[in-house]
Length: 118
Image (tube, rainbow, N blue to C red; front, side, top):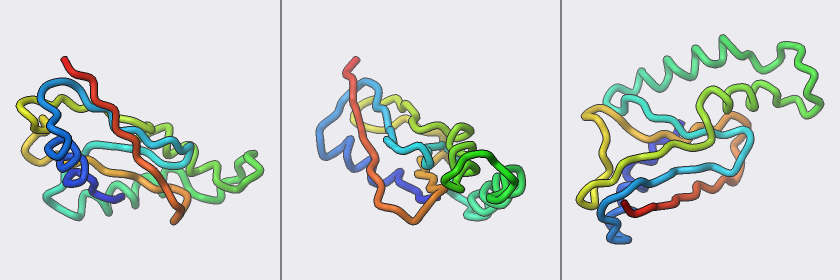
């Protein structure tokens, strides 16, 4: 899990985005975007430990590439999230952060951002 909140916030400010919605999307089937607490690092490790216990890597899946667990984890965290932007600022709760979740790497990945004014 990589905290990308600062990078997404910088994109909003540097591009002069005022009011609307911003979609953060990863075009990958084994990576996701999620929102969670970013004040206490133990939340991240608790999440990773739990998701790995619930969806273990080698549990006899049928998927031939050997990364079925990564695909299932992505379903749970989603490949995208949408955020409100008001007055050129991301609208997040006090403790919320935006996380890129890598389930089948490390790999070279991209995150796409799409802003819709409104």
